[in-house]
Length: 309
Ligand code: DGJ
Image 1 (cartoon, rainbow, N blue to C red):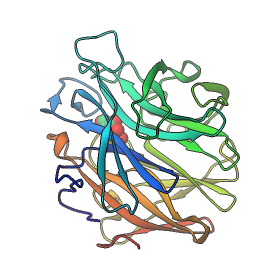
Image 2 (cartoon, protein in one colour):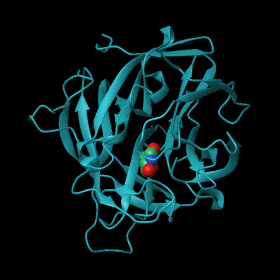
Image 3 (cartoon, helix red, strand yellow):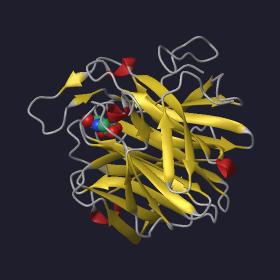
Image 4 (spheres, protein in one colour):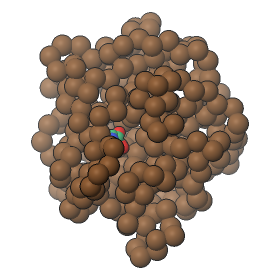
C-alpha cells in the first residue's frame, strides 16, 4: 500500500475512487468512490472554490488485503444528456458510501448529488442485491427539508444507521437516523457544530463511544481535521480538537478525510482514509491512508510511510 504517488489496480490502471468509502462484507473489502474524469471546470463568481468535474459515476474495487485492488465495475453509472436526472454528466456526484441492510438483504449507497454550483444540495440513494453493484438509483432528498452537501453514512452494531451531512449552507452538521431499510431519512435528527462550518464527515465506533471526524470548509485546499466524541449518535457531541500529530498536522498531512475503516477495532486500530485533492486537475487527485489509534476519547493520527499489517 502506498501513500503518495499513483495507486494502481490489479490491471495496472489508476484507481479512480475519490471521496470514497469501504464496505467490508464476507471477508472482502469493497472500495466505492467518485470517478473523477475529464478536464476540471472552474466556475466563475462562486462563494466556494468552484472547481468541478462532470459526474462520471461511482466505481467499485475489491480487495482481500487492502493492498491489491481489483476493479469490479462501475457500481452506479452516470447518465448522458438527461438533464432531469441527478446522475447526469452535467452535474456532480460526490462522497458515495455503502452499508449492508441485514433485514432487506440489500446494499444501500448514499451520495451527495448536486448541480455544478452546489445549489441543489441533495442526498441521493441507490440499492443493489450485490455488494459491487450495479446499483439502482432510487432518487434524492433534502433530508427533512435541509440541504445536504458533504456527507457520510454510519451503521451501528444494533443495525440503526445514520446519514451525517453538512447543512445550512455548510454551517452546521446534521446527524439523521435512517429508516429501517436505510433508503430514507426519519425525522429523528440533531444539529451539531452549529456555525462551525465543517465538511467531510467520517463516523466510527470504538467500544461504547462514537467518534466523528470532520474537516474545515476550505474548498479543495487542505485544513486541520477535528473530531468529536459522543455516547450515542444522536447524543451530546463533545468537541475534542485535531487528531493529527506532528509536522503538517495543521493540513491533515495535505489531505481531507473521507472514511474511517476498522482494522482491529477492539484494540483501537483504525485506518484513516483521505483524499489529496489536486484542485485544478481533480482527476489527478491522490489518496492518503494512515494508521489511526484510539485510546479512550483520544484519537491519534500520525504520519507514517507504512500502513499497518
Ligand atoms: C471539499 C469537499 O469535502 C468536497 O467533497 C467538495 O465538496 C469540495 N470541498 C468542494 O469545494
